[in-house]
Image 1: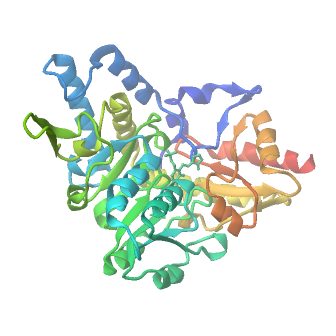
Image 2: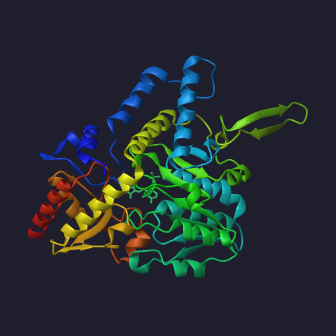
Length: 411
Ligand code: 7TS
């Protein structure tokens, strides 16, 4: 088991007081806090190694390039990919999904083709497919969710057909924390010759993820939700799929050669090797290095321990929240089928009112529909309050949270 009190010493922000109360950060599903190791590596990069990558023979450029390439290695090992050729650095999950939609979907989806998406997706795994279908004319089909809780696997198996070209789904819901059975979905998708795109924004930071074991074609995730800086994320893709794809953005870094024929006055371009073919322009070098440090931090703790700690916190919170009679929790009650995310409402109050009340006591939670409006429609809700945990949260913080919830009920 991890020791959250020891971990907390690495997070300078957790020493802050908000409204004269110790900060309780229960919004890690939106973005996590950063340990000093990550903050220091960013500072050190700009103080000692700053240069552009892959563009110079000078010492600084060599150092920056090596660090940036090592960051790809670190990510590959973390998710058990087959090396750096399968690891593309992007801005975050949103950009990773858009990359697949435009670089793969634009050329491979048309007419009668179908894209299967679930109704528990974050908008970033719905909107790009809807936008693309307006250009290419294919259909986006949605898989139902059982009473707003788990995915309806029977509905998924009914909906999939030989017309399905890609199945896009989240590993973990950012509203309920439900963990989907990725292996089962991927196996069915592959039986129909469809690819799989897994949104790992809420899974990769919180549980062990092994792309070979899950057998997915694409996995998208964001560095800022796993102790890393903002503006850096990852698209994992199976090498054979990425090799077949055309680039997403065009520019420097992603080409091997651009030659201009002075007779025909035509330009011929050849693409760079993977993964650089998909990383046009100067990348977020420092972000990549920050993400590497974040992953090293998580690996030292062990992802099994991260998972166990959050499961313990989730179970404890749901149990303690039962003491609050005006509080209604949504989603499954069994902590073992979900990650550390709990959505709820307080009878008679809007989610924003509850979040503001909690803020007065230094407790940071998310309110609204968390960029997942379809799932809220299934719950027949306008919005919800969401608490979400990470390695630095403690049972003591939960006790304080429940105390304040009771105060809200009295109010
Ligand atoms: N997919 C899921 C499942 C997410 O939870 C999020 C962000 C994204 C995609 C988009 O990630 P980004 O890094 O590209 O923005 N989710 C949240 C949230 O739940 N509250 O704030 C952001």
